[in-house]
Image (cartoon, rainbow, N blue to C red; front, side, top):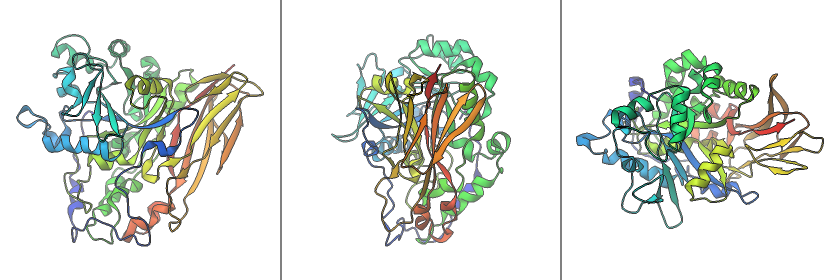
Length: 466
């Protein structure tokens, strides 16, 4: 997000009664503010899930940290500490920082990795392409540097060439030439806020990836009305109820349930790019800044805390080397990745794989159409779903995109779906959920928000060629 609209009405979230920060959910399990290790999702064919955030702002974005990210020229210590702590608490495995050119373009490249005493720059402190943020002996976070302006280069190996003025101009560009410049600096080039782009623009830019969901777009009144066709104030009005301070109120983390909607325009652009023959990876953008709601909710955190926003969803790559920046970047480049809205639950056992005479193919890969080729989808379950909670309704859909457009070719609750791959096209999977198991945590609001069918997972496509 280049500039965030002020949302003063959200100040009402701070109003309420006592400041108790725990929910009385007995006989239900206490709400978890953290996430389990991504490995609980299940290792498949030697590939380990790694949980990641793509589109994340630090104090090196001018509008982060309530618009004052570097008081006295130094990164705001509380804001920076919140970001670093959230990465560890949520067991994030990689984070692709995407700061605005103001002030990212003005800084030395090595400064942008936010390192502290226990962190390491990789492969060296003199020419870093990543940093390893140590959380515990068992968990570290791979941090990479990128930018979000009209384009969003992720995982840069270095700044684009030139002095600070030249870098500002390069990072602010929105042309195929800028895409080439970013790739020459080691980046993969993403499009943020796809909902605001036309298919023709995207074809001209030919990015490596696009956002198929952006959190800010789902919330912002102007974007909702102008680009998503949603009620302008609907999200804000719905979120207000989650500011209740009484213990009988809803769990604040569940505020996303009140406004989460699929980004229809972004998904349509993605399908149209595949119909045009392009191969483009899809991701979800957290777009966190800690700059919208500085008021404390009853769990003791600000409404837009880094932890809360990064708890909501992640981009899960499948890699054979968990702490290796090059391996993670390769998985993203290959499209071996899926989006998971982990607020609904961490998915266990989700799998999309194609098999044929040529062997096994993962997300992002290709195989020829044949009578013997088959797509197999394993429909996931919710990690550690307590027997005392209501049962969520989960179903899968398989969508084929070809020159004629997108069409559903299979659907059902699973546990397994199979689809013959005898026709060329891009085959992607959506897992949808009615999260009834979250109803008890909505407290005095009642369970209505847990009775809506919501996106849980978006896979990346497997490509079937003639």
